[in-house]
Image 1 (cartoon, rainbow, N blue to C red):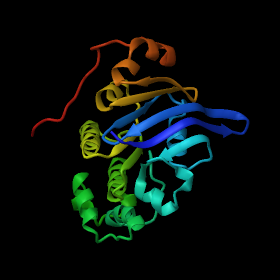
Image 2 (image 1 turned 90 degrees about the horizontal axis):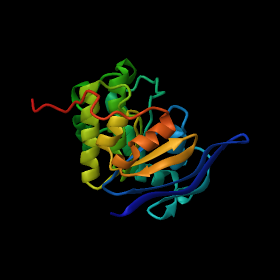
Image 3 (image 1 turned 90 degrees about the vertical axis):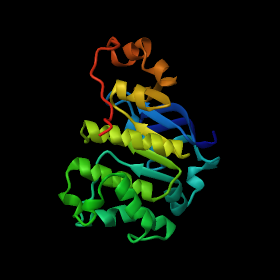
Length: 247
């Protein structure tokens, strides 16, 4: 699979303190790459650094090109971001918010991609609703639709299911798998250990801003790394599990 995004020796400083140190990762087309770690581990900082939203040291490349060399329009067409929460308070309709994803390509809210992505996230019936009137979970689905409307090969999502109920969370991860199978690369911050192991192809476990483990989910969500990073014992087959029903 072709490399889409590659970070080497990534470092982020806050004053004199390194909040991210020596992070390496590679995202390939067709892959769901999960970022996992306890609170304060540096997950959101890593996401922002990968996107070039904050100053960082080291190297981040998209399809072999330094992201710093990409114009704003090129970056917007290559990499789409879904934050944990939206700060948008303007009385824009759902359609207008999703339509923002078409701007880098010279499109508009009337583009068929807007309708297609609203349908994908199950919000077609809410297209004319004012975005601020939606629940937090509904707003999150709008942000995912906006990211999809860009057509970007690389999607970066920061805990996209945090505000969703069980069914919507399962649907979101099923959608991410479909997108990866279509050839996109997905970077997703995940919080739950079982969720991380079940829904990703590769995991990067952060601890104190450094990579504590990296590899297949079964090797990262495993007794030794979890004990070392979280200070708890991993107990297999001791949790509820869910899957989408056929109905």
